Amino acid sequence: MFKTRLLSGIVLVIVLIGTVGCGGRLLLAVLAALSLIGLSELYKVVGVEKSLGAAGYIAAVGYYLLLLTGQTEYMMPLTIMLLVAVMGIYVFAFPSFRAEQVMTVFFGFFYVALMLSYVYQTRMLPEGGVIVWLIFLSSWGCDTCAYCVGVLIGKHKMAPKLSPKKSVEGGIGGIVGAALLGALFAFAAGGIKEVSANPFHYAVICGVGGAISQVGDLAASAIKRNHEIKDYGKLIPGHGGVLDRFDSVIFTAPIIYYLALYLVGTI
Image 1 (cartoon, one colour):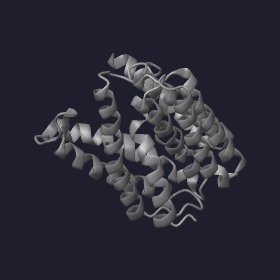
Image 2 (cartoon, helix red, strand yellow; image 1 turned 135 degrees about the vertical axis):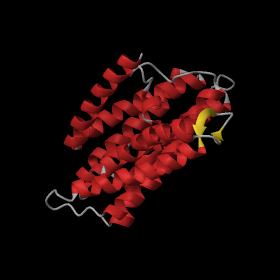
Image 3 (cartoon, one colour; image 1 turned 45 degrees about the horizontal axis):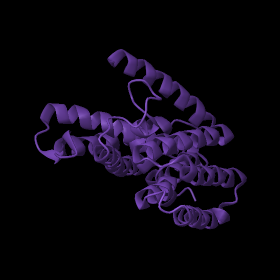
Image 4 (tube, one colour; image 1 turned 120 degrees about the vertical axis):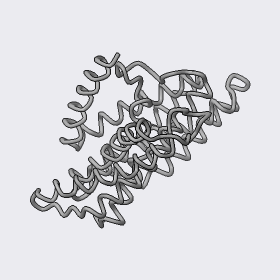
């Protein structure tokens, strides 16, 4: 299992570097595909029927098309249309669907498609080619640092009923580790022409991103615990599905985007 996890992790990193590095339509298309897969994973867990889930898929595709064309003014109308559509299906097909299934379709649009799209939106910022890596540095870097610190000195359980192995010490270590990684990354990025990377700003961004990433990780775990499953899917060998691997990234991406806007000043 370790070998499988390592090899698939290497492939994932290579694909990540290629798509995020290129940015543009390629990155948007990959994120759209990941969003649709993530939605399907979430729908299977909750038991959302294909006819109802179709509304969520269509809304997700429509959302990414709006991002592609730059017609962001239609985001709110799209959201309202999705709500009207799922409620309409719920009402006219009653009692075929349960309320929690309907709410999952609407929730999933925000949780998976919209929040994951902030990887693309961060990449499209001025200096986004550098800043976008803070999303993965803070989320996956925090996870690694939290694990190492937790194994070494972890004593107090963070969420004993939800994730018994996670400790408060590990959580703090993950945040501090992510902040240090952000500062180091700023020093490295500072050598790139026309990139103004402030180590303090990057440390704050990664520290906050690391804290939020742990919420995302635990949130995904909570959904799995509620439905008594180990993984959302089997797309990535050794890692599970899209929601298993990108659970922290989903929460971190919007935070990094807005911190970059207001702290780094990329408006």
